[in-house]
Length: 554
Image (cartoon, helix red, strand yellow):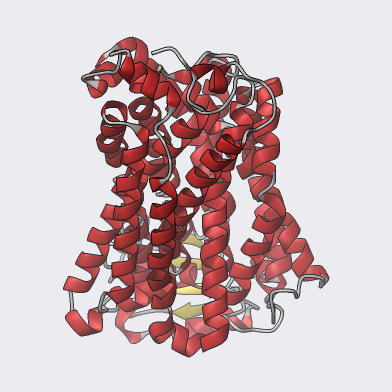
């Protein structure tokens, strides 16, 4: 593929060189996503290892926020590495990003926990997460741009859809390694030290990725532009200080990647978190359920990517956002019905109310996990939320104490330091299950998928994955086509990583904080529903269709 004609005008079958470009770009990106997702999949164990000085509820939020820290810096990585990619080239930029990502992940596997080195452990961990996020901020734009600039006209959606599978395949690979290690070592050993193995294995994947990418040539579109002396000397200024381009960046974010990001992270990460932390499904089973949904659904990234070459990127992405927003509530309720029917029954039949002096009740919304609750009204509500109990708050007379009313029975709660054994017993008596109770879905092996309860959950998770493939399959092609070659890497990377890194990456912690503050296990779904709906509306009216754009223009 040494000529422009080979990549932009030809409409025949995929050549051997093009297949290698897609394989090399996609495989390296799979390994990067594997590195990145290991942390999310093991957030609860990492919370216990590195945030052990805090209560369990706070550990969970800290662990999620440390995961989110990697997402928060992704836009900065997009700016830094996007600029390098538009000036130096696509190939060498994503060689650097994969080295940073791989080495950061390997070091996590060696890092002593808080019990060994104290506060230094979480500080170093967060620093490594920030490095991973910076690297990933430069990785995706490079891979997507590189593949799109090799693709023939009329097939960019199909070609770049292979890049879109990499995030899901990376998650799937991380789940497989975790499940294999868990099974081989047993849960106690895995929680104690075995969780490090998946991080350490990543150094092998790093070696393969670097070897593959060293064999790549520069993108022909970029190389031609550079040879002609048309490359940008100041891509950041041209991308963001020029309103004609900056407004497209804003539209790409609000009318595209924002909704795509929240649908994606709801369908994969929040679904996993919902199963484990809210429905009390054991980690082994929850990971298997998600893994099977990915097995059945991943091919649809390519289906929708190819379909977007025929009917356009915009209708598929926006339809995915809209359908997801309309169906998240019923789908998650059905997941509860199948995964933990006792919890569903308790939510419907048990009336739980916290009654207290309004002056003694604060706001429980705590997405950053830094607040410490000490008032009895707050601690008992936090306990109920952690136990997945649906509750309401009513206010008593000024100076009155705190009590929990469960099905009409008053349970005094006078002192936050006294614990909550009476409330715990009453919650159990009202039918609320705890981890390990009979009736909560449990898989004994990876192929235990034919039981109706298990099959139903996988089917519902599969639907969520279909939404993910609709919004994510065509997005790379659309972003590449929105911007000119000389500032493409920089321009497309920023809205992508704000939409996915900020709106998507903050979703688990924010949604769980909404659940805790409202006493409703489904209330966290309002976060993705609102943002997906905004994208559907803004994208419909203002986002241009791009499938027929000539991307060879500088």
